[in-house]
Amino acid sequence: MTHHGIPPETGPARSRWGTMRLGAEFMLLFGGTPLLILSLRRAMVLFIFLWVAALLATWWMRGTRARPHHRKREIAVVFGRFLVLGSGLALLCWQLAPEHFLDLPRHRPGFWLLLMLLYPLLSVWPQEVLYRQFLFTRYAALLETPLRRITASAIAFGFAHVIFLNWIAVALTVAGGVLFARDYERHRSLRLSCLEHSLFGCLIFTLGLGHYFYTGAAWHHE
Image 1: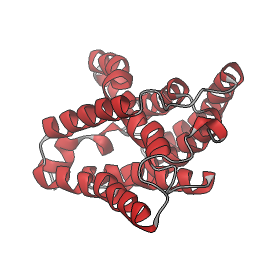
Image 2: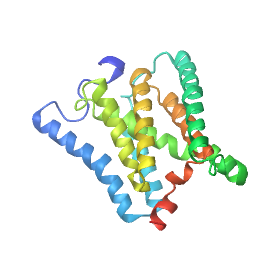
Image 3: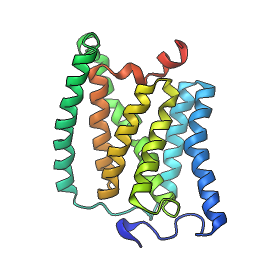
Image 4: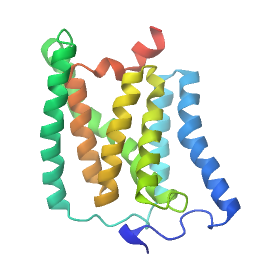
């Protein structure tokens, strides 16, 4: 086992053909799938694929997942950074778009509360399985350094959000992808990764940025 518990040979052997095959698989999964979903424009297809892919990835990783490190200290880091970055993001949203600030809690509190409860369960977990845990494990032989893993995870995560047809969604998720992937590289805890993603995701919806991540707005009002 290598550092953080990643098997030295994950997937195809370290041959030229094996590397090419892994690369093609990566591009097909993380590049082709968002484009396919965008071409179909069916929200249920997106939801089903996300969950089926995450469940298959979890099955494939059985027995190969890394052991988390320094969980108690990392929890404090996650919440401390969220307070700082979240406060900055809130201030920015309030200054740039005061008319949309806190839209959901102010105008649709019931829906906002339901979203706060369901979003981490229905959306965050499968995304973190695919874009952090599975990507880091399956493509370890292709992405041999922390920088490569973090970069690939962030770009793939951001590109997945092209389905929303706006640059703000892509920019925010690339930035979030760098943060989540960098932290996952350090602690290798899916639970911590889900916690951090949930905090920032719920904050984005709370602040009034949720319409940038809504397929209905993207696919029916171009």
